[in-house]
Image: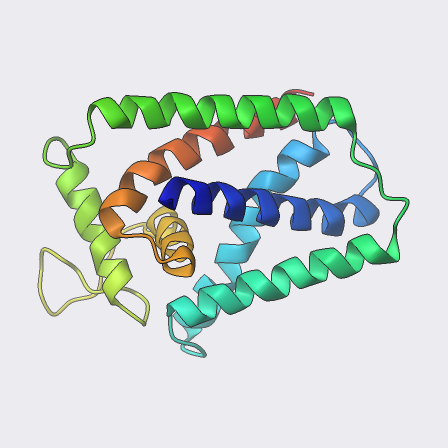
Length: 193
């Protein structure tokens, strides 16, 4: 169920961003692939900034609200331009590449889902720290009482999706590897087309 929820979230966010970007940018190959990545970045960057400044708390309600507003804006953009077309060949190629890479990394993690060797315990501690906090920067999991002085925006993206979809951190850790694998694949595809 967690995998399906994340898949639905990624698709909806990507489609909403395409509907917002397509009228604003000149048509070019790779825009659909680009919109998948930009959608995830924008939908997480705005809350990251608002929470970092101290305006809002990093809660599941915030992430659900931001997602709903973002999707509503995408729907409005689509309804204003009903002639907006989706390039079928690019959509097909992007979706096959994204979900192929996603499934490839998901299968790899399914054969080795443990989080106890290498840097995984550190990554998982950062992830859990972000899951528990409502303010930024998150608390340092290894040095109690101090803020996390580390690049944590990638972890924030994962936790933002996890909080929005109510996915357990251990599941989200493994799904995130597949998500970033798919997003990286379509980024390269979009840049190369």
